[in-house]
Length: 565
Image (cartoon, rainbow, N blue to C red; front, side, top):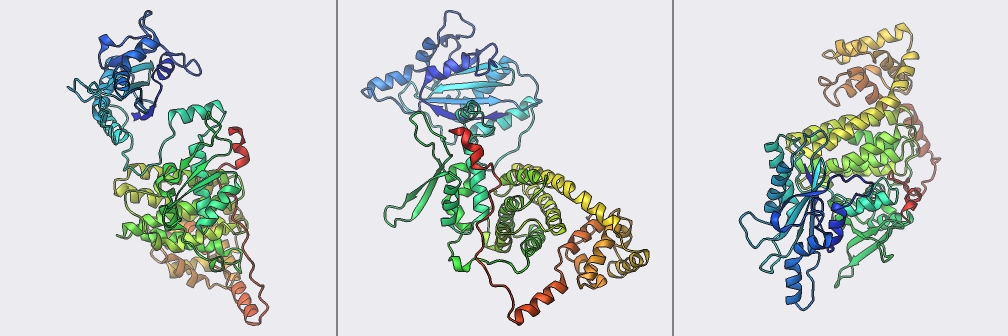
């Protein structure tokens, strides 16, 4: 059951919508199911003599009285609105049950505490099977405003109780770290303009993608502006430093033609200026990493850092683990941006899904995740995905997303665990799309029988406790090809198997040969490294160059947003 609290200033306008046909004639049989006084609340849906204006005047009675007492100054945002919807698949609720839901919510939120004869006036209107709209005017009979602080959270808490008592689907409990959901007005605006997402959602995804790619606060605002997003900063009165900022989507304006601004912290908590600064320390351009000597290095570094992050999640340092989850969220955006191929859509979806899993009530230690964050940003400047190494990285993300879901679940973070599971499913789908043909090709190019037998003996010697499962794994033949390639690259197969086999336990691996295959793929080419080292010593290495600008963020491109205009 989902409540969604908002406020406004037009009582009659909201009544017209609630009792009207709806934007697409979706409203059926609009009628009042509960009210502050059923006898005193005219019902335009069931009483042909009742009018919208009459109902609005009854609801506004205390507001109008207070306005006259204050010499014509009307209470601001005096209309309180809270739709309450059951989850898909929930049973049908009767009018009597919806009336109880409404009374419990106005009591819990402070609109109309039970037994308070001077409480606000309110109604609950039903015009569909699965939801009601609770509307109230927030001036009490004694002229005071109700105590509605944290009303949205209190409504959520009451809905969790109602779900349990009514036998409805139990939604995930939150910890007050979720992003703000778009208001009904924002959703309606997006629908009118033919948008699939609201301006708030679009801006949040753009900001996340840009923050993942850039290295400084200045770059963050510069790249956002280059995407057509308006940026407005707030300066401290004494220091003149930036103490906050707001963003506006291209062409998104209000009725007066002015940009609709969203503060960074209002988009989501970890996009506030202070949270950004924890992840984007201001550093000189000269300190930025230059081109990697090996184009595959960014992919290899990120894979290594993700493997290390899994170890941190198994530790008792929750702050460090939370820091690594935040950095992993950035990594997912940059992996998606630097990836080509049809599986890119799954990676983008994973990055967006993981946003809810990247933060919790546990304060993140971002310094602990410096290696992963730095490696992730290298990907923003990297060349296209280098074949099997990119798949090895994707394979590592699949397992880290699953580990993240488990970490959150163990700590009771229900919404975050669900988000990590969703990201895991997208990553797994993307991995399967791209890995299946590559593994099939490795199997097809398997080395001669004698070579395969030699590798089999290497496995028995290097990993005796896992040899049986490795050799019985369907991907064993593909692994022999990878071992042959590693041997050509200068690795000793038996020593390499020992090394990668001890990087992390294999007991929980469903396909240990597949795990070893991608761990070996992520190892550097020793012969190439040696040749490059000799070239550097002789003074013939290529000069470093200034890195190119970061790749385009994974969120919808600004030209696709032009329909807001």
